[in-house]
Image 1: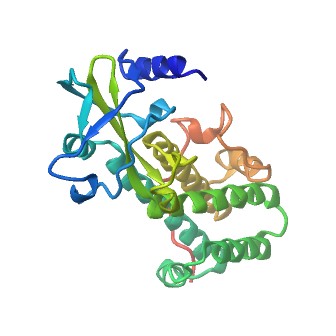
Image 2: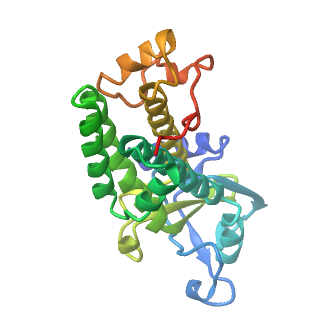
Length: 276
């Protein structure tokens, strides 16, 4: 993509304001290292080629096309990524709760007992293998296709969760053709900080939203599996789900999936406790 085309695209994304490739940074009160904020861990100024790296535009016209770093940091504290990151972590915690309930159901432990065991398993790969073994012990190979695909996706969720928790926040800043500053926060791998080039992989607010939605779907699928196999859903209500749980899971969910329907009885948590 040519620079002119890129900056035109970014401009359309930010309400028609086209970004200029020239950025002048003016540190306020000293070097950038002397400016601190409790939220912004790292400062990473670049002319990114991804419009999703920019999320806020201030209303101050800067005819000299210069960015005061303290102004950029102040605006960055309002970036939606701070809330998106918290919601993503919360969604993963809800997914973990669903997996904990699955452990209780498969092992026939009380949920309080299962929670004591589950949350002591800090290795997610070990946790997943335990659940896979218990699923085979209780249900044989009946639901293998579904759960093989589920755990494959779950491993990717676990990896992404670690990135969301451990990566550093970084600020992208630029001046648009209205001479206004635009900024955005992304998450970057700590090893890429201070490198000669922008980090190849950055997590944006959009990525965090997609992650939270995926965690929600996988938590609800887990809860629905418990409800159906425990007998809380029977007859016509259970039949489509029993069919789903015997087929490979496809994500994103295909159109017509009952989890996407507002009329289906989809519990946010299993409706009953496991015996024990």
